[in-house]
Length: 324
Picture 1 (spheres, rainbow, N blue to C red):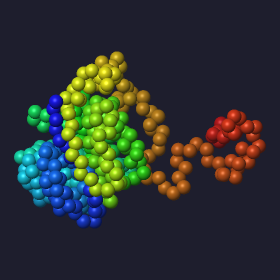
Picture 2 (spheres, rainbow, N blue to C red):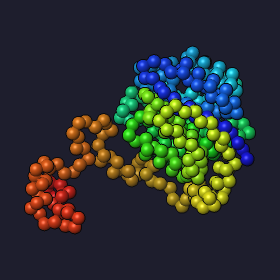
Picture 3 (cartoon, rainbow, N blue to C red):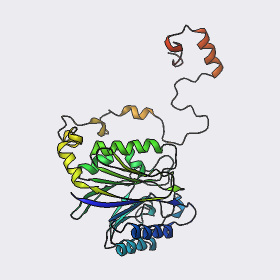
Picture 4 (spheres, rainbow, N blue to C red):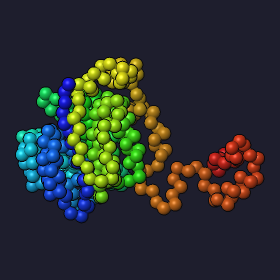
C-alpha cells in the first residue's frame, strides 16, 4: 500500500476583496483537525476571485505567504490559482502553483483551456504540469475546463500521472455534467481525480473525490467543507496492470492501438466539419445560431397542419432548409 492524505478545501470566495486571509485560517483549522494531511488543494481562483482586474505579477507577497504556510505545516500546497501577468508577453494567465513542504514553488501551471468565449482576456498555457512526490507517486495538475478536453488527461496519464489534481470554479448550470466528466475521467485514465470547487463567487460547491474505478469517495454539498482523503496509489498501479475490477486495461489498449488519429493532424482535413460551427463567441438574446430552419412560428404551424403526418406527429416538411 502507498497511502497519501490529500485534503480539499471548499470555501466561500469573495469576488471583490482578497480571500487569502480566509484561506490561511482554514488551512490552520484543517491542519489542527487533521494533522495527518500531507497535501492541500484549494479551488480555482480562490485567492482573489474570478475578476481579471485583480491580476498580479508572477512574483508577489501572496505567493510568499503560501510558501511560508506550506513550510510551517510541512505539506504540499496547491492554493487554487491566480491571474498572473507574464512579463515576457504581457499576457494574463490563470496560473496554479505547486509548493512543496520546504516552501518552494516547484511547478507553475497555466490553464490550457480558458473558458472561452467567456474568459476572452485570459491567455492559454501550453505546458503540462507533472510532478513527483518522493516515495509516493506521480501527480498531475489541470484546471477546470481543461478536463472537458480528454487530450489533456491523456497527455498527463501517458507520462505516468496517478493522481489528477483539479481545482475548478464552476458556478454555472453545467456542474452536474462536470461531475460526470470527473467520474468518467477517473475510469478512462485509471487515476484518482481530486476535483475542488468553491462557493459564492467561487462556484456552487459539489467538490468531488473519485477513485480509479469511478467510485465517488466523497462529494461535498453546497456548504463549506474540508475533506481529507487517504488515497492508495498501489491501487492505481494494480488496476493499470490487471484492469478495472479485472476488466478493461484501457491505458495498455491505447498504447497498443493499431491506428493513429488523423484528427490530430491539423492538415489532414479530417476536422473540416469543425470549421462549419461558426465563431467562438457569446450567444446573444434570441440567437438561432446552429438552426438550419428559420421559419416563423405561425408559418411553421401552418405547414404542420397542411402536410400529411408521419409517425409520432412529425411532418415531412419539418427540418427542410429553404431551396431543398
